[in-house]
Length: 187
Image 1 (cartoon, rainbow, N blue to C red):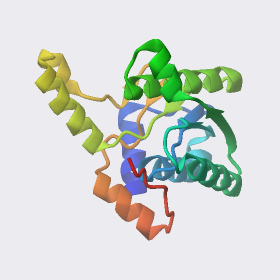
Image 2 (image 1 turned 60 degrees about the vertical axis):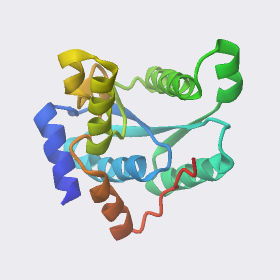
Image 3 (image 1 turned 90 degrees about the horizontal axis):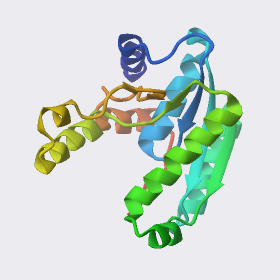
């Protein structure tokens, strides 16, 4: 069922076109592993390619385990794997920015670099419906006005979000059903 919902989202927002190459930002968590698994199962039907980009931020104790999990997962699927080791804490301190903001900047820059190297047209991010609701609430609290009511869009430039209409509990159920055992962020 979730696979069909993702396919409907792809078609509704025209997220993927034949011959696209897509860099998937994969952390190893339930959302990104679900995105990877579903898009991998749809790539022949929709005629597109995927590669994976993973960032080891060097912050959490289990980061090496997450990296290994994603690498092995990609090997099993036959998907090309890129990994960046970053010292986000040091970079945040140096640039006098918050940890989350710095981590986001590092991630998106890396995704862009991999997209250039792979000549990829799109970058897949695993935001889901719950992330979207949180974003809308935060935007309202910040006083963003009516623009903030839109939240996270399914497609913004080269960035696509195939799970944007999927609830978090559906993702968790999918992971259990498929015995994916994704990484859980202890932070």
